[in-house]
Image (cartoon, rainbow over all chains, first blue to last red; front, side):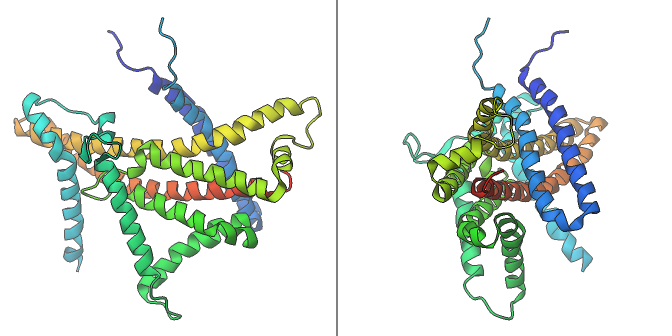
Length: 73
Length: 289
C-alpha cells in the first residue's frame, strides 16, 4: 500500500510531542511552586509565560519548515 | 423557564450547523462523496472591489465588522459611567480590570503599566473580537486566521518593546543589556549573544504571529470537519438508508463541544498575546536579566 500525502504534518506531530511535554512540565512545576509559596504567584506566572513562549517556539518552527522551499531531487 | 432557555441554544446550534454545511451542499450533490474542509476555506473569492489592490473577501469583511462591533461596544459601554454601576457597567469594568490589574500592572508595574495601557488594551480587545468571530453562527471564521492581522500586531509588539528599551537606555545600552549577558563566562558570551539575537529579535515576533494564526486555523478546521461530517453522515449516508449514518449524531455532539472549546481558545489566545507583549516590554525595560 502506498502512502500518499504531505510529510510536513509528521514533522509538526514530532515537534508537538516535545513541546507538549515541555509545556506540561513548566506549568506543572509552576503550580507546585505556587502551592508552596503563594505570595510569589505573580512573578512565577510571568516566568511561566516566558518559558511556555520559548518552548512552544519549537512547535511553530516545525510549522514554518513546511513552507521552506527545499530543492527537489 | 428551563424550556425558554433551551430554545435559543438549540436554534444557535442548528443555524450554525446549517451555515457550516449549506455552502457545501451544492458541491455534495454532484459527487455525493465526503468533502473535507480545505485550506481554500481561508481564501474565498473577493466580494467587493474585485481586481483592485483593495479587494475585500468574506474574511476581511468579517474583520471590519468585528472592528465596528468592538468599537461600538467599547464606546457605548464607556459613555455613561456611574459611581454606582449598573449590571452592564460591572461586566464592562470586570473585563477592563482583568487586563489592567491582572496583566498590565502586574507585569509592568504601576508607572510603566500606565504608559503602555492603551496599546495593550487595544491589542487585547481587537484580538478578542476577531477571534470570537470564529464561533459566531453566520460568520464562522476567525478573522485572525489570515496571517496579516496577527503579523501586524506582532510587528506592533516588536516595535513597542524595541522602542521601550531604546527610549529608556539608548541604543548601545539596550542591545548590550539584551545580548551581552553578565554572569556568562567571557569566552561563551559571543555564542550566547548570537543565540539571544535569534531568540529575541527573530523568534519572538514569528512565534507571536504563528501562535495566534495557527490556533485559529486549526480551530476552524476542527469545527468545519465536525459539521461537514455530520452533514455527510446524517444526510448522505442516512438518507440512502444506511444505519451507519447515525454516527452523525456523535459528530454533531463533538462539533458543539469543539465550539465551546473554540470560545475558550479565542479568549485564551487574546490573553496570551497581551501578556507576552507586556512581558517583552518588561524584559526590555529591566536593568539586566
